[in-house]
Length: 145
Image 1 (cartoon, rainbow, N blue to C red):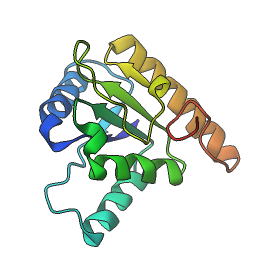
Image 2 (tube, rainbow, N blue to C red; image 1 turned 120 degrees about the vertical axis):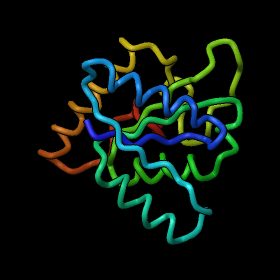
Image 3 (tube, one colour; image 1 turned 60 degrees about the horizontal axis):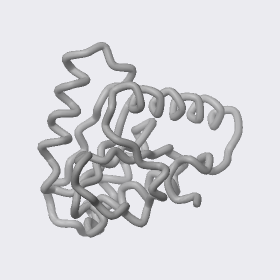
């Protein structure tokens, strides 16, 4: 699946690790690196929206400061508004991080291969169903509480 990855800039290492992991293994998803390297302005928003629309799922890496990253939150909120399913991955098992406002805590999981694969499978099922009808993502994705 074409995947948009959202993260706070200080968590870029985890994005890189995720990309490398999927390259080395036979994963059910492909990764599009849509990292922002320019200031957050209207031009940046247009470019990111275009990249988000080319994706089939959005994954947010959630660390200690992600809840403060307006850019990353905007990316997930935009994905959900556009009908693209999204889920979050805690990047630290032993370090508390407040959930960003774009997710309810139960829509965030620890980064474990089986769980991530399950979420991609669910996202793919939603994508197929959404192609048959229009509507919002199911409640377990993103903003719905």
